[in-house]
Amino acid sequence: MNILFVSSRARTPGSSDEAEEHAATKSARTATAERIGGMLTAVIRPLLLAAALLIPAPQGLEKAVEDLRAGKVATIETWRPFGDSAVPVLIAIAEEENTPQGVRFAALNLLGDLKLRSSTEPLLRLLKHPWFNIRRVAAAALGKIGDDRARKPLEELAAKDPFEWTDEEGRKRFLVREDAQAALDRVTGAAKEKAV
Image (cartoon, rainbow, N blue to C red; front, side, top):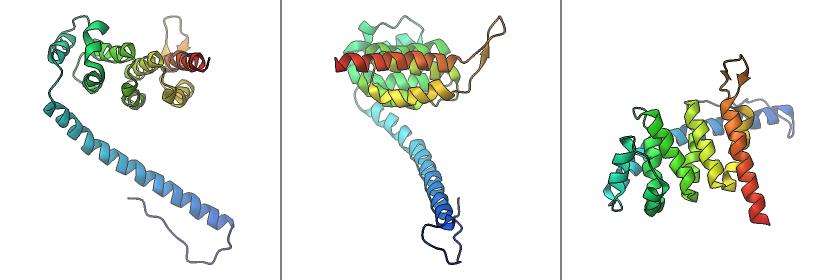
């Protein structure tokens, strides 16, 4: 737990002491908000998944999930009829650690191909995933969707993602940054088209 130390000495309004105290208070509030957010995510996410299980799935969704998990080719034509109902299912598959990576990537690619704006927020969350390939594919999916809400997070990912890879010729590449930039180019292009 963060404890904020407040000095008992007198201070002049606008002084550096006041500025330091303000910065410390702001930092403590930010840390507290992040802890609360993490706790809420840990509690709420399982509840949302449990609630999703109680809601009857659209006809054919279970078969589509079964086929996807079995590695069968997932087509947009198969998944489009499920609409927004597909989003939490595909996100859950993408987040499952024990699911084969090809299945996880297929789930994320489907979200991009479906272009459902309701998948933007969950995909934005995946831009912070610990595994670089999930960040890459989530960024690509956001680029396909073209939602302007992805612009700032994609800019940040394109500028700062730490993953570095060395190719066969010894060149260092930042694959996540490259894919985030390509996605950002698609998002900004989509925004320009809407403005015209």
